[in-house]
Length: 405
Image 1 (cartoon, rainbow, N blue to C red):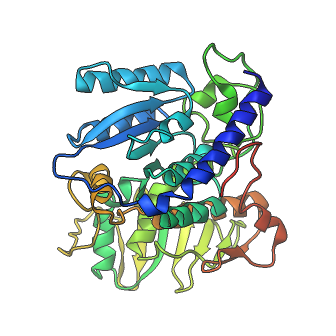
Image 2: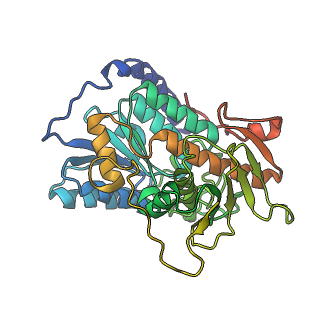
């Protein structure tokens, strides 16, 4: 198939998907799961992280993985072997094109673990086709993508869970300490995660047989193939990811936002380091709380309040108060939370709004680094104030024929 034919077929698919999607809201809750019904899943993006996530879902007896997808043959074959070994058969379907997964009427939900630049397109098209979505973090490549994903999830009645298990499982001690009043009123938080992404500098390499490089790039600008990118090494590069700021940042900043009960809003100012008054990238919230990128003493997270700080710098034991904070539903961690909500139609712990707000904060931090100037942010309108150049970075152009909406 020629490049023009591929683009035409993709364009036809998107038009057909939009037409079909118009009927889906009426059917969004048509399936009622019984006690013995299994949730059929398709898994898209079967590199190391994707196969790890899929392995987690395969541990639930109520899950039936029907199809796996990756543009790299070795990845999809390894995933198919995992599924067939789990079910002791050879029934798992395999494809290199995500559109074949979301077009299947017998698939209820999809796992998306592709590189970040693909998350928004696959998630929105899947939701329009009536699928619930579990999407690896960061859920988005840009700020605007997250709000579009949230709007699509609500319009089509879909369950969407972002994939950061650490926000609750690793950091609930901080949540209980701060929300339980152990340090008084929280004032500051330090989040020690990686840096912003930058331009891709990798030299050209020959495309291996069977790898669909054009589809791997998808909406990203065209560039020559390099094996690092298909082996999980895409995160340092701006066209595909936000770097450490959005990778571990979605864990760390997500944990800090939930600890401070700021996970449904955003900062009002983002100040890059200046070597003087602001040694660290600083996020300022409307209530006066400040987050700093780096500089903490307690590993990934540190907090200071009016009555103390955590963790203790001398290593003395600090017991969290025995309080309940709403978190996962059902059983089995973040995967079980998603599956429970697929059945009940509740919103999961890391609903798209939480995922979007966390990723947006990280994206805004990257913008302040890239532009080297402070940004004023309206977290209600989700607009950068009085800075047209920075505003253009809230979204990115996509390579034809890919688009959102």
